Image 1 (cartoon, rainbow, N blue to C red):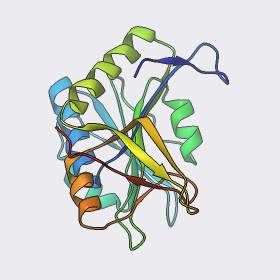
Image 2 (cartoon, one colour):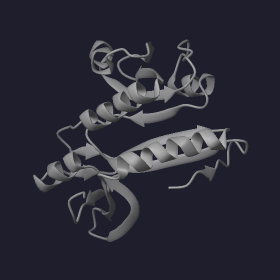
Image 3 (tube, one colour):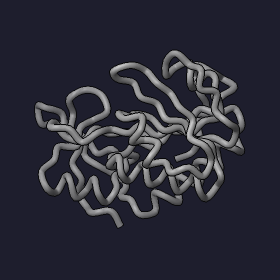
Image 4 (cartoon, helix red, strand yellow):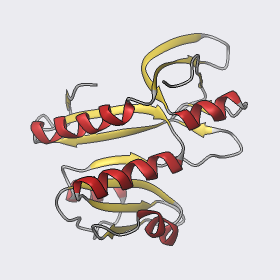
Length: 191
Protein backbone atom coordinates (compact mmCIF):
# COMPACT_ATOMS: atom_id res chain seq x y z
CA UNK A 1 0.00 0.00 0.00
CA UNK A 2 2.94 2.36 -0.60
CA UNK A 3 2.98 5.11 -3.25
CA UNK A 4 4.56 4.02 -6.53
CA UNK A 5 6.32 6.09 -9.24
CA UNK A 6 4.08 6.83 -12.23
CA UNK A 7 5.67 5.72 -15.53
CA UNK A 8 3.67 8.18 -17.70
CA UNK A 9 4.28 11.20 -15.45
CA UNK A 10 7.68 10.63 -13.78
CA UNK A 11 7.16 13.61 -11.47
CA UNK A 12 3.94 12.03 -10.16
CA UNK A 13 3.55 9.30 -7.56
CA UNK A 14 0.68 6.83 -7.90
CA UNK A 15 -1.41 5.01 -5.31
CA UNK A 16 -4.30 2.57 -5.82
CA UNK A 17 -6.12 0.35 -3.36
CA UNK A 18 -8.27 -2.13 -5.36
CA UNK A 19 -11.40 -3.25 -3.55
CA UNK A 20 -14.99 -4.35 -3.59
CA UNK A 21 -17.28 -1.97 -1.72
CA UNK A 22 -20.83 -0.75 -2.10
CA UNK A 23 -21.61 2.77 -3.34
CA UNK A 24 -23.11 3.56 0.04
CA UNK A 25 -19.91 2.59 1.88
CA UNK A 26 -17.76 4.65 -0.49
CA UNK A 27 -20.03 7.69 -0.30
CA UNK A 28 -19.96 7.46 3.50
CA UNK A 29 -16.16 7.18 3.40
CA UNK A 30 -15.79 10.24 1.13
CA UNK A 31 -18.29 12.24 3.16
CA UNK A 32 -16.47 11.44 6.40
CA UNK A 33 -13.10 12.42 4.95
CA UNK A 34 -14.51 15.65 3.49
CA UNK A 35 -16.13 16.67 6.78
CA UNK A 36 -13.28 15.65 9.08
CA UNK A 37 -10.49 17.19 7.00
CA UNK A 38 -12.42 20.10 5.41
CA UNK A 39 -11.80 18.86 1.87
CA UNK A 40 -13.28 20.02 -1.40
CA UNK A 41 -15.28 17.46 -3.37
CA UNK A 42 -16.15 17.08 -7.04
CA UNK A 43 -18.69 14.71 -8.52
CA UNK A 44 -18.65 13.32 -12.06
CA UNK A 45 -21.41 11.76 -14.10
CA UNK A 46 -20.23 9.94 -17.25
CA UNK A 47 -23.62 8.95 -18.73
CA UNK A 48 -25.78 9.96 -20.57
CA UNK A 49 -23.59 13.09 -20.86
CA UNK A 50 -20.43 14.00 -18.99
CA UNK A 51 -21.15 16.44 -16.17
CA UNK A 52 -18.93 17.60 -13.34
CA UNK A 53 -19.85 19.64 -10.30
CA UNK A 54 -18.17 20.95 -7.18
CA UNK A 55 -19.69 20.33 -3.78
CA UNK A 56 -19.19 23.20 -1.33
CA UNK A 57 -17.28 22.36 1.84
CA UNK A 58 -19.64 21.18 4.54
CA UNK A 59 -22.49 20.45 2.09
CA UNK A 60 -24.52 17.23 2.24
CA UNK A 61 -22.63 14.90 -0.12
CA UNK A 62 -25.49 12.39 -0.42
CA UNK A 63 -27.91 15.15 -1.46
CA UNK A 64 -25.42 16.52 -4.01
CA UNK A 65 -24.98 13.04 -5.49
CA UNK A 66 -28.75 12.56 -5.70
CA UNK A 67 -29.01 15.76 -7.77
CA UNK A 68 -26.35 14.67 -10.29
CA UNK A 69 -27.06 10.92 -10.57
CA UNK A 70 -25.78 8.65 -11.92
CA UNK A 71 -22.52 9.81 -10.27
CA UNK A 72 -19.60 7.52 -11.11
CA UNK A 73 -16.61 9.26 -9.53
CA UNK A 74 -15.96 11.33 -6.42
CA UNK A 75 -12.74 13.33 -6.14
CA UNK A 76 -11.40 15.01 -3.02
CA UNK A 77 -8.65 17.59 -2.59
CA UNK A 78 -7.58 20.48 -0.39
CA UNK A 79 -7.79 23.15 -3.11
CA UNK A 80 -11.08 24.15 -4.78
CA UNK A 81 -11.97 22.25 -7.96
CA UNK A 82 -11.98 23.71 -11.47
CA UNK A 83 -15.19 22.30 -12.96
CA UNK A 84 -14.81 23.40 -16.58
CA UNK A 85 -13.63 20.06 -18.04
CA UNK A 86 -15.28 18.52 -21.09
CA UNK A 87 -14.41 14.98 -19.96
CA UNK A 88 -13.06 12.92 -17.06
CA UNK A 89 -9.45 13.01 -18.31
CA UNK A 90 -9.46 16.82 -18.51
CA UNK A 91 -11.02 17.05 -15.07
CA UNK A 92 -8.14 15.23 -13.39
CA UNK A 93 -5.57 17.07 -15.53
CA UNK A 94 -7.03 20.41 -14.38
CA UNK A 95 -7.31 19.24 -10.78
CA UNK A 96 -4.06 17.53 -9.93
CA UNK A 97 -3.44 16.40 -6.38
CA UNK A 98 -6.91 14.81 -6.25
CA UNK A 99 -7.85 11.55 -4.57
CA UNK A 100 -10.50 9.64 -6.53
CA UNK A 101 -13.11 7.04 -5.71
CA UNK A 102 -15.01 5.31 -8.53
CA UNK A 103 -18.56 4.36 -7.56
CA UNK A 104 -19.64 1.07 -9.11
CA UNK A 105 -23.36 0.34 -9.05
CA UNK A 106 -24.77 -2.98 -7.95
CA UNK A 107 -26.22 -4.41 -11.18
CA UNK A 108 -27.98 -7.57 -12.33
CA UNK A 109 -24.52 -8.93 -13.19
CA UNK A 110 -23.02 -8.25 -9.76
CA UNK A 111 -20.71 -5.70 -8.13
CA UNK A 112 -17.61 -4.54 -10.04
CA UNK A 113 -14.31 -3.94 -8.30
CA UNK A 114 -13.24 -0.34 -7.83
CA UNK A 115 -10.28 1.48 -6.31
CA UNK A 116 -9.27 4.34 -4.09
CA UNK A 117 -6.63 6.03 -6.24
CA UNK A 118 -4.49 9.06 -6.90
CA UNK A 119 -1.55 10.46 -8.86
CA UNK A 120 0.25 13.27 -7.05
CA UNK A 121 3.48 15.17 -7.40
CA UNK A 122 3.62 15.94 -3.68
CA UNK A 123 4.84 12.75 -2.02
CA UNK A 124 3.99 13.93 1.51
CA UNK A 125 0.43 14.75 0.49
CA UNK A 126 0.06 11.36 -1.16
CA UNK A 127 1.40 9.66 1.97
CA UNK A 128 -1.26 11.52 3.97
CA UNK A 129 -3.93 10.07 1.66
CA UNK A 130 -2.42 6.59 1.95
CA UNK A 131 -2.65 7.00 5.72
CA UNK A 132 -6.37 7.84 5.47
CA UNK A 133 -6.93 4.80 3.26
CA UNK A 134 -5.05 2.59 5.74
CA UNK A 135 -7.18 3.87 8.62
CA UNK A 136 -10.35 3.08 6.68
CA UNK A 137 -9.07 -0.34 5.62
CA UNK A 138 -8.69 -1.36 9.26
CA UNK A 139 -12.27 -2.69 9.16
CA UNK A 140 -11.88 -4.40 5.79
CA UNK A 141 -10.40 -7.73 4.75
CA UNK A 142 -7.34 -8.09 2.53
CA UNK A 143 -6.90 -10.91 0.02
CA UNK A 144 -9.32 -12.52 -2.44
CA UNK A 145 -9.36 -15.25 -5.05
CA UNK A 146 -9.57 -14.13 -8.70
CA UNK A 147 -11.37 -16.81 -10.69
CA UNK A 148 -11.25 -16.98 -14.48
CA UNK A 149 -14.27 -18.34 -16.40
CA UNK A 150 -12.35 -21.60 -17.07
CA UNK A 151 -12.00 -22.11 -13.31
CA UNK A 152 -8.34 -21.16 -12.84
CA UNK A 153 -7.88 -19.44 -9.46
CA UNK A 154 -5.20 -17.03 -8.29
CA UNK A 155 -4.89 -15.46 -4.86
CA UNK A 156 -4.63 -11.66 -5.04
CA UNK A 157 -3.14 -10.47 -1.76
CA UNK A 158 -3.62 -6.75 -2.48
CA UNK A 159 -7.37 -6.91 -3.16
CA UNK A 160 -9.59 -5.62 -0.36
CA UNK A 161 -13.28 -5.98 0.43
CA UNK A 162 -15.64 -4.31 2.86
CA UNK A 163 -18.25 -5.84 5.19
CA UNK A 164 -21.15 -5.00 2.85
CA UNK A 165 -19.33 -6.50 -0.17
CA UNK A 166 -18.67 -9.66 1.85
CA UNK A 167 -22.37 -9.90 2.76
CA UNK A 168 -23.38 -9.49 -0.89
CA UNK A 169 -20.90 -12.18 -1.97
CA UNK A 170 -22.14 -14.52 0.78
CA UNK A 171 -25.69 -13.97 -0.52
CA UNK A 172 -24.59 -15.08 -4.00
CA UNK A 173 -23.99 -11.73 -5.71
CA UNK A 174 -21.06 -12.11 -8.15
CA UNK A 175 -18.01 -9.98 -7.33
CA UNK A 176 -16.82 -8.90 -10.78
CA UNK A 177 -13.37 -7.68 -11.77
CA UNK A 178 -13.04 -4.03 -12.76
CA UNK A 179 -12.32 -5.11 -16.36
CA UNK A 180 -12.72 -8.44 -18.07
CA UNK A 181 -14.74 -11.44 -17.04
CA UNK A 182 -12.97 -12.80 -13.97
CA UNK A 183 -14.79 -12.87 -10.64
CA UNK A 184 -13.57 -12.68 -7.06
CA UNK A 185 -14.26 -15.00 -4.15
CA UNK A 186 -13.79 -14.00 -0.52
CA UNK A 187 -12.68 -16.52 2.11
CA UNK A 188 -13.22 -14.70 5.35
CA UNK A 189 -15.45 -11.93 6.62
CA UNK A 190 -13.70 -8.59 7.17
CA UNK A 191 -12.40 -8.11 10.69
